[in-house]
Length: 424
Image (cartoon, rainbow, N blue to C red; front, side, top):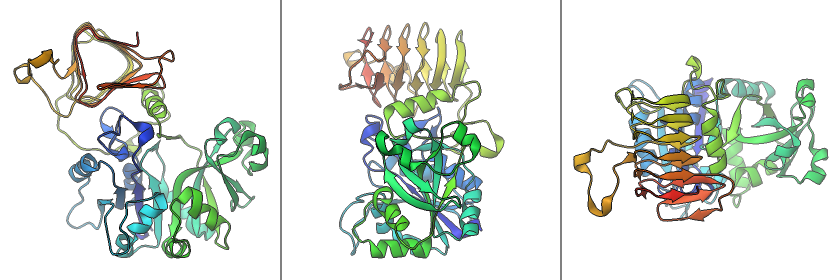
């Protein structure tokens, strides 16, 4: 059955809400969990569900994403599986870039037409979840749906941030509203099990995960040539038509990583004693590039609720509730709390460092204190630096760092000189 399904992962637009992390990379290429990329999440879910024909659609800053996919996802010569990037391109039918999620799939549909399949699964490239798509596809077939929308039950306070579906008792979606206001929310409750009612999770939020019958998707594009977006146009149009549109209710962990704050919180939650997103589950492991790095070397450091990726050299005093990415270098006497250190793309050594303008070595220096921060890759933070994020800080953009929602972000390749104080 999975051979009849092709997955299309939407790489997103400019990713402005994730800047500066998306200033020089596409959203799916943003590092997460110390050693992974965001795109690894939906691809891994597909592979665990035996979906092995996968397209990733992207158009902004796609070089690092292309490189990651090329170096990571390679199938044997006797397999029909692939993970291919489809970037926006000019064709006789279209001369412009992707104008939205639906437009991106519509512009690349000629690639899908060349593939034999019954179903097309649309996925987002910026979500954190572990989902067995097999069950969703089985539900789609069994119900005889033309379109299935994955939904997750949320409480009223969360519902105003999502597209909300209203189901009947058979799981058929009757209506849809985008980000309803609190005063009309009571009219958008759906039939849910009693256990969810008791928790107040009576509102079905769209997860941005869809299964279309291939012929149905083609016809929707033909009938709605000006539609640009799935959530705002294609899905509401389908619900208001004779098509059978059903909901697939998912109750596991799922979070949308669309902002710096949600990205920061999702990463730090991985350090919990029993995280909702389980990196250690054998049957749900996240696939990524095998870098063949040595184990991390740690000297005199107290680690508490920390995730440390391979290839690091750490002499810090204390690391608490933080993620330390690949090839990280952290000097002695340094304290890191509630922070994300993305690591480095390569090793640098003292004899390779320019002494011009006293540029620090790549990594984090000695006697630093870093709290509530995101340190992007290949940053150079000198000695005796204090970086203290918090709600007391105003948003700002500087040459080497930004502050967003109280979180200090050192940009990729950013330079913070000895003795610098940011936010504290």
